[in-house]
Image 1 (cartoon, rainbow, N blue to C red):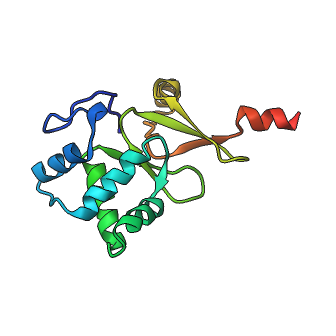
Image 2: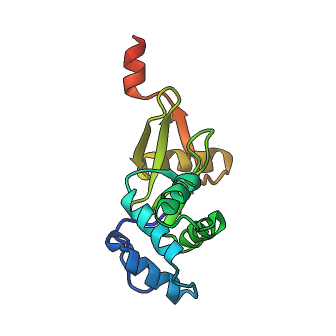
Length: 159
C-alpha cells in the first residue's frame, strides 16, 4: 500500500490529522458500527503510532480497558482499518505480523541480532523494485515484509 503522508481519505480526513473520532466517522461512513471496542482499538493504535504492535499487543491493551471484549472483535477492527488504508501490517521477521498507522509509508529493515526496526522511506527500496522489474519482469510488493540484516550498532560490536 503506498499512500503518501497527508493523503486524503474518503470522507475528507487527512491521514496526518487522524483522531479516534475521525476514524470512527470514516468507519461509520463505510457501513461500520461505532462500538466501544472499535474506539479503544483505534485509540491504542494512535497511542502507539511510532511502534509496531502485533494483533496480540493491541488486544492486550484493549482488554486492559475493556476486559470482556473478544479478540475476534479486535481482529475484525484491524482488518477493517486495513481495508480503509488507515493501518497496514508487516512481517518483521519470524514473529507475528505487526500493525501500524499509514501516516507515512515506509519500508522496514530489521536487525537479526538485536531486533531493531529501522524505517526507511519508500524511495530507498523503489530502485530495487525497478531493477527487479527490468531484469526479471518481477513486480515487487514490499509493503508487508521486512528486509533482514544487521544494524550498524551490532556490526560495530563485532569489530
